[in-house]
Image 1 (tube, rainbow, N blue to C red):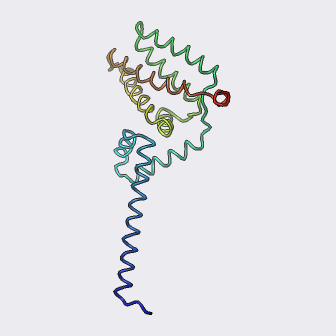
Image 2 (cartoon, one colour):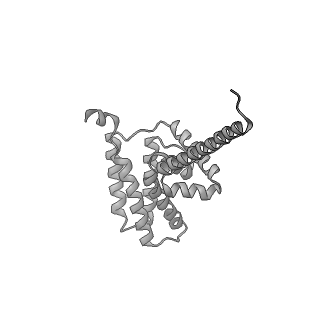
Image 3 (tube, helix red, strand yellow):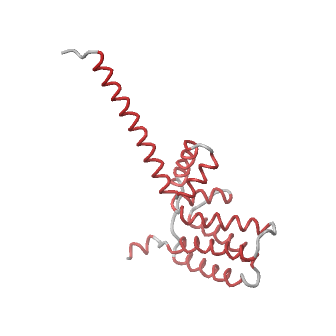
Length: 187
């Protein structure tokens, strides 16, 4: 039984359409997964930075690879207590010296991130690494950092500095409350 030319062309056309649909579904699933992992805001910010979806998604995937190579860990109980005491001092100093409180809060978060294994050169590297597993909290780090930069230039109001501290506290709480592996095993 021989297939005629029309049948062969029809089969090839169907295979081509199926391949296009599968390709489209693969990219749609990847885009959805990246939006879910990094959050809509970070996905959009990366898209605007790179200008094209393919480049933005490649950047996000590269971030995932970089973070997979980091030795990330929760804080141990002693570190959590020490950072908690320092955070309480930062918050209590805000009324008397908001500029210094924001500067200290930023430095404290950087030290906390380094203790957790989020190593990198500068804010951008730490921020991008943080977005991989903590996209919702990373936006607080970014917002606080942007205000802290304006404050360093003398361009932030006291209310904006208060907002920076609120953003930093949201990230601090998230990073501090994750239990250490020994605590998880004990539970």
